[in-house]
Length: 249
Ligand SMILES: CC(C)(COP(=O)(O)OP(=O)(O)OC[C@H]1O[C@@H](n2cnc3c(N)ncnc32)[C@H](O)[C@@H]1OP(=O)(O)O)[C@@H](O)C(=O)NCCC(=O)NCCS
Image (cartoon, rainbow, N blue to C red):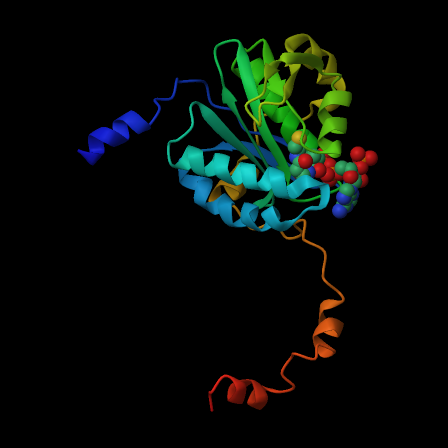
């Protein structure tokens, strides 16, 4: 009975070609691999997305909470035709991008989340995702929205995306922008980088394990917390006072 019900709840994905892994040299000389992952690797991502839900800066919170839901939806078969790409440096998780095939001509860009800052890692991962839709899936356009000013600068301005305001985007129903094949062709020379095939040792390292990001965005430290606690008249002066107030020895 429950097996039958699960069949109704679970969408059947339309087959689409896989993303061929690529690699690129970052501005600081490190090599970054971008590859597609399947459902089996989603649990390795979730613990690194969850803490970002508490980072308000640059809108990491709203993006992370949505990415978490999208990853879980993919893992638990509650979304139609989603894919997930990861960027890794020396195995370390550097970015996550995802999206969805709407139909043969149209793609839906979900999110881009950079877990290491300042090297255009998010920009490179976004370009790989657009390449997936336009070159690999052969779609005519990808619908995109931005949830942060940096995102708006990176996608709408750098690619000069076209307005498709009559189409509500799947992320919150807000007006969509479109990256067309023509716009992508124009950006190829400058914004889209990377080479194939990925050298065997780089790919093996990336596939071996998704390592935690070593310098992820963090919420600001509450530097005044210690001072506030010290002068808090309701605070216990020591452990013995606390225990006796609580009726403990
Ligand atoms: C949008 C995003 C993917 C872009 O990633 P990116 O291309 O790797 O760019 P970064 O975020 O590292 O840097 C963006 C700018 O902020 C600056 N910056 C911000 N924080 C920084 C930090 N801690 N260290 C270094 N630079 C930083 C960079 O110098 C850069 O400036 P530039 O645009 O003049 O080059 C990334 O900012 C991100 O994940 N943001 C939160 C989620 C989000 O908004 N996603 C997009 C939804 S539309």
